[in-house]
Image (cartoon, rainbow, N blue to C red; front, side, top):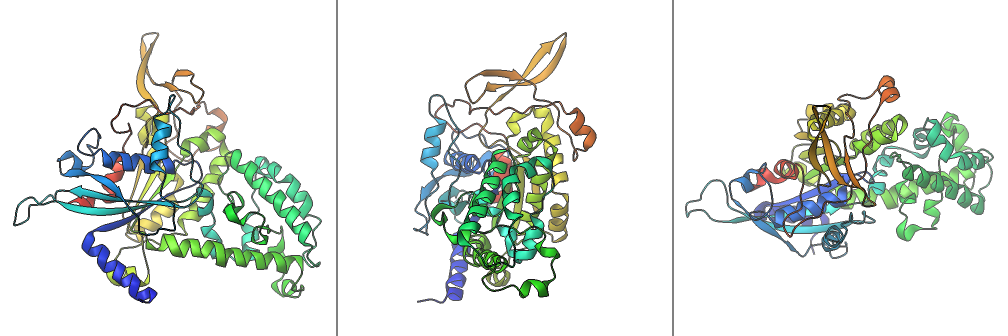
Length: 462
C-alpha cells in the first residue's frame, strides 16, 4: 500500500501522462453553479454538432470532437445530477435545476485533434476533466481557518440596520449570557438556534456573508453540539488572561471548544480533501441580485467575496510545488446572468465585477496568477430586442417571468464602478428573474460559455 505522499506523487505522474485537469466551480449561494456545470457538460457533449462555441479555438477550427461522461474515481461522492438538471430544463414549462445541496463531481473525457500534426498525421487525443460542485454556504466557512474563536467573534459584528433586525432575537438572548458562568447545554442550544434562524432569514433576504455555513445546510450534523455555537459580542475586547481564567466548563470555554472542533473536523477536512488539489477555478458572482437588493447587501457580497478569495491557494504549478504546496494556476471570475441586462451593458457588468474584486485581483496579478474577468449566461433565459418609442429605438429584453408572464422590458443601466450614495439614491433599474428559454434538441443557448471554456481548458486542447 502506498503512503499518502507516494499516492499523490503517483497521481501527479498519471495526470501528466493522461492530460487530466481538475476544475472547481466556486460561488456563493444562488450564483448559478448548477446552471454553469449543466451548461458546460452540455456544450462539450454537443461540440462539433449544435453547440455554438466560436470563442473556443478548438471548436472553431473543428478540432473539438466532443465529450462523454465516465465513472468518477471517488465512489463515495455523489455524481453531479446532470440528467435531472436537463429534465428540469426540458420540462413544460422549463424550470431551473435544483440548487446544490451537497458535494458532487463529474468526470468527462474530451476528445480533440491537436493543433499541430504529429509525425504520423492528425491523431486524436483526450483530456480528462474532473468537475466539482459545492454548496455556496459551505464555502463561506473557509475563512474561519484564519481565526481563533475571539477573533472570529469580532468579524461577526456586522453593521447595517436591515441585517441587524434579522438577528434581534439572537442579540436579546445572548445579551444575558455570562461568558464566565457554567454552560447550560439547553440554553446554548436555544441561543444557537436563534442565531441559525437569523442566518436563514439573512440568506432569504439576499445577504451573502453568512457564517458558519453548515448552520444553513447542516445535513447529517443537524442537532449536533458542533453546530451549537455562536459569536459572543465584545469577547475580543476582554483581556486574554481574563478569558483564560474562566473555567473549562464556562460558556466561553464551551463555545470556543465547539468552534475549534468545527474548524478542525468540519472545515479543515473539507478544504484538505477537495480544494487543495484543484488545477483551475472559476468563481461565479451574482452581481445583479446584489444590486437589486440594495447597498447593504451589495457591501455584504463584497465582504464575503474578499474573505473567500483569501482562502484559496493560488500560484504557478510545477511538480514539486504541486506536490508540497498545491496551487490553482488559472482563475476565471465571472458575473453570471448576463442575459438579465441588455447586451450594451455587458462591458459595464465586467467593469463592476473588477471594481468589486479590485484588491484580490491586485494580489493575484502581483503573484503572476493568470486571471480573467468576464460576464456570461450559462443558460440563456432572454432574447435581446429593440423597442421603438417616439421615433427612437431602445434596447430591451424579451422573456418570461418565473410564473409565465410575458416580459418585454429595459431593466436599466448598470454602474461601471462601485456605486456610491448618489447612485443608490437615484437607481432606477430592476433585473427580473426569467425562466429558462424553451430549447430544441440541440445545445443549451448561452452567452460566452465558449469564452469561459477557452480560458479554463483551451490551452489543454492545443
